[in-house]
Image (cartoon, rainbow, N blue to C red; front, side, top):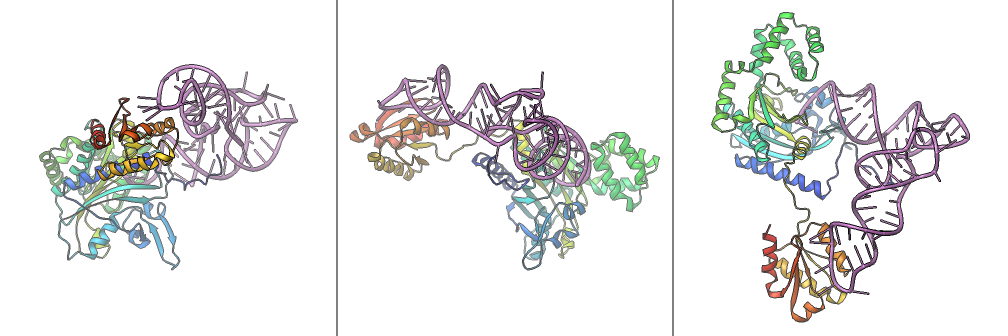
Length: 425
RNA sequence: GUGCCUGUAGCUCAAUGGCAGAGUACCUGACUGUGGAUCAGGCUGUUGUGGGUUCGACCCCCAUCAGGCACCCCA
C-alpha cells in the first residue's frame, strides 16, 4: 500500500467501532464481577523476569514473553499473565488484607506467539480470583462466575460449556494406573494433546513416553469415563454447589482438561464454544495452592480464571450476539446555516448541553445536504437547523432522522422535543 | 519455531505470459433550506516489497514482509 508505517505484528488498532466493542466487553465483565462482590485492581504492565521464572510454564516464560534489558541493566518482562503479579501484591500485604480477597482485573497482556485466528500478541484479559479460602465451594463460585458471564453475553448451554476437572483426582487415578510420579507431567501433556491428535499417533506417543499397554488401556478408559468424578469428594461438592447456584447446566466433568500452567493443583476448568466455529478455549483457570509461598509469602490458596478478549469477541461476532453499539456519543447535530448564523447555532448547542444532552455542532458553515449526510453517516438521531426564517421568529427546525419527519418549533420547546426523539428508541 | 495457502482500487473480488477490470464506497449533478432510495457522470492502482527469467510478467522462479489454515502453545 502507500507509505503508511505498519503496526507492530500481532497488535490491533482500535477504531471507534472496535473500541466500543472493547468497552462493552469491559462493562460486561465489570457487571458480572461486581455481581459476585469482587473488587477491581491492577498491577504494572512491566514486571521483572524473575517474577515469572519459576512459576509459569516453561514455554510461557522462555519463548512467549517479551523480555528486554532496561537502561539500568534489569531484565524486564511485558506481563504475559497476571497471576504471579497477584501473588506478589497479596504476599506484600498478607497480614493486613481481609480474606477471602475477591479481586478482578481487565487489562493488556503480551505474548510473543504466532498471530492467527483468535490469537494476537497484544490482547486484553479478564482475570478474577479468590484468595484465602480452599474449598470446592470457592472453586464452584469461580466456575459460576464464568458461567454467569457466558449467560450475560447471551451464550446458551447449547453454545458454550465449561469443562471441569481436578488435578488431585487425576493424580490419584494416575497412581491407580501405576504411573510413576516423574512421568505424571508428561502424561498430563499427553492428555492435553488427545483432542488434537489422531488416535493412532496418540497411542504411539503414549507408548514412547513409556506407558505399558495396560496403562494405556487404563488411561483411555479413564478419559472416556464421564462419571468417574463421583469418586472425588472435591468434584462431588463442586458440582453440588453449582447445582445450588443454578448454573450447573453450563458445566460438565471432562477428564481431558488438565491445562498447561504448572501452578494449578486442584480444580481446573476451561470454557469452549461447542457450536464448532472457534475451537480455542474461551477462558480457563483453576486452583493454585503454592503460588503465594513461591513468591515469598505465607502459604495461601487461591482460585481464579482468565479470559482473553480475542476469542470471545470472535465467537460473539460469529453468533451475532454483540448488541448494536452507539457509534457516536452525541445523537444530535446542530447545523450551521451560514457564517452569520453560527453564533445562533452555537448558543442553541450550549443550551442543549446545559440540559444534559450530548450535542455535536457542525464545525463550519457548509451546504445543508453535506451536514445532513454527516449526521446520517455518524448514526445520529436528530438534526437541528437555525436558518434565517427560524432566527427571525425565535424558532428552530428539528428533524427526526429515523422517521424522516420534521417540525419547526419555538426555541423554548426544543429541549423537550429533542429528549422525546432520543427516548423514542 | 515448522508445513501449506493467499496478497490486484478505501472495501469485496476478476483478468489462460500479450492494452489492469467489475461491484461497492467516495465525489459531482438531477434536488439553490434537508440525510438514506433512484438515475446520470466522474475519481481511484509502484498488482505487498525487492530481485530474476522473458521480446513482453498480476501471471513463472527466488527472497522478503503481511494475512489465513494446520502443528506447537495458550486467554
